[in-house]
Structure formats: C-alpha cells, structure tokens
Image 1 (cartoon, helix red, strand yellow):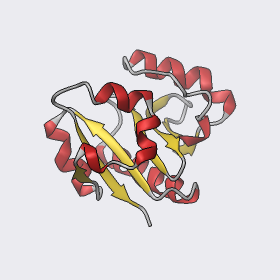
Image 2: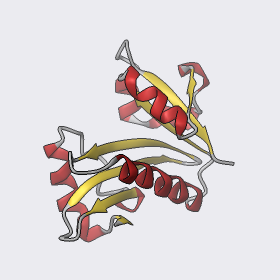
Image 3: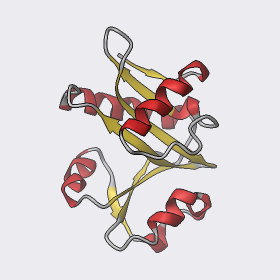
Image 4: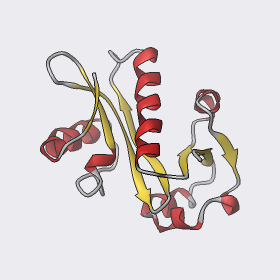
Length: 145
C-alpha cells in the first residue's frame, strides 16, 4: 500500500532513511510531501519524498528494501507525480550520480537538464548546493504543467 506520510510517521520514516544512509534534514517539516510503501504489517518497504521550493520540488530520499518489486517502485513514482500535481507544482527535479538510473527516470518522463537551466528556486536547497560540488552528478527535470 502506498500512502502519504503523516506527522505520526516521522520517527519511523527517519529511522528507515537512516538505515539506508540517507539524509533526514527537512523530513519533519515536509512530512506531507513523503510517500510510504508499506507491507501488510505496516513496515516501510520504500519511500520517496519531495523537498518543496515554491512551484518546484526536488525528489529526495528514494529508499527501497530488497523486497520491493519494480512494479511497486513504478507505483510509488506514479503516486509521487499525482502528489506533486495535487500540491500544484510546475516541475520536479532529481539529481543522480548513477548513470544506470538515467534510463529508468527517462522512462518516467524526466529529461536531463543543464545545471544552469534549473529553476532559480531549486538553488534554495542545501541538498542542491551540495550536489553542485559533486563532479559526476546530473540533474533531471519533469515538467508537470
């Protein structure tokens, strides 16, 4: 089951992200921008979040367990797109340094974009500022409007 995270999910979500060695800054403030994929027992199997910046967002915190299937990964992405549209976002961005993941993101509708073409609001993100210092990272954008 995929659902939006709630305030009462913050501790469970933060623990899941820490186990995946992902940052947890901003999770509490933007918990309603996170989706959880849970098993029947309520254990998180995957998560995906948006770090909101006005009309645009940065996809963050994609973490999946080995038990999550490709179909479930597609489902969480589809639900994230619906959430972003519901939140009236114009574009979603993501950053990756894994060349192998580019094809998957392109299949989801993302296109590679030059750093200089990023929406000005996305530069407010401390995460983006860090990514800009990493040589082999690239940005991708999905226009929602």
